[in-house]
Amino acid sequence: MGKRRKPSTPSRARLAVLTTAVAGGAVLAAGTAHAEPAPSLATVKEQVDKLNEEAEQAIERFNGFQEKQRKLQGEANQIQEKVVRGQAAMNELRTRLGAVAADQYRSNGIDPSVQLMLDSDPASYLERASAQNQAAGSQAALLKEAQGEQRKLDQDRAEATRTLAELETVGGQLAGEKQQVQGKLAQAQALLNKLSAEERAKINAQESADKARAAAKQAGDADRASRSTQRTDLNAPPPPAASGRAATIVQFAYAQLGKPYEWSATGPNSFDCSGLTGAAYRAAGVKLSRMSQDQWNDGPRVARSDLQAGDLVFFYGDIHHVGIYIGDGKMIHAPRTGKNVEVLPIDAMPYVGAVRPA
Image (cartoon, rainbow, N blue to C red; front, side, top):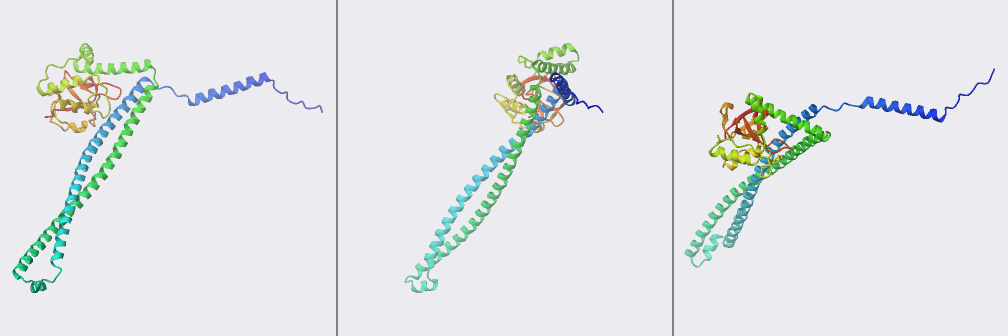
């Protein structure tokens, strides 16, 4: 039998070709397995809008907890002041009780019958005995007053403990909502950061087109829509219909155009939606609730056909957004993070209704 030949060792060049081919195949396979198509601009815009809406809902809850925290802190301060005053009153009562008790002890150290026998002036003794009886009655009255004061003090201390515990709970809820707001806004910003400047410009153009379509729906034709859209700039003239208190509200709102939205801000340099409406009404001498959901109950409902400049207009099913109606189917509102106070057709968002605070 002939000798078996050993398989020849591949050359270095051949090894290099084989290694490159295998590596290239592996990279191609990995790329095929994990590559995901980039989301369309419409998808990104939808996701950003959704995150901003969820952030605004959380902002309104944050505002509510913040308002509750302020109220509870005020109540806690008042109760603690009552406790301090009650403790001071108790200290004074104890001092008076001590003085009465000491005086009584000094006077009653000897049995009364013995004192009468030994006293050289029985009439004088009887006067002192009467005074002692009055002192005893005074002591009983002081004891009763002290018991009542102690009960009030104990009640105030218990109320202070409950209020401070509730305040701590609300503080935790406030921190949780703040974290949620920041998380939603960070997610939205991260999505936008992945886009090029050109893509972001396209999204902004899409928002402008959405506003124009909303204006067209109100006006009834594209021509009027174009004019309405042009009036959303900072030079938009105030509607002439407003007068009296409504004029003050609308003029205040116009003066804020271009100022940045800032969540939980109430002015004067930045606002959130309910912060702007509250500040505008405050300028007219009317106090509104802090949250948009509560402002919904700050006045009687107004039919859309009866809207007047200065009315509050509300949006979304849970009423988490509010603006100030200025006439011609438009409002001034503080939109969301990254935007400025602006004029916008009320049909640009899901309209719920309006109220006219007194």
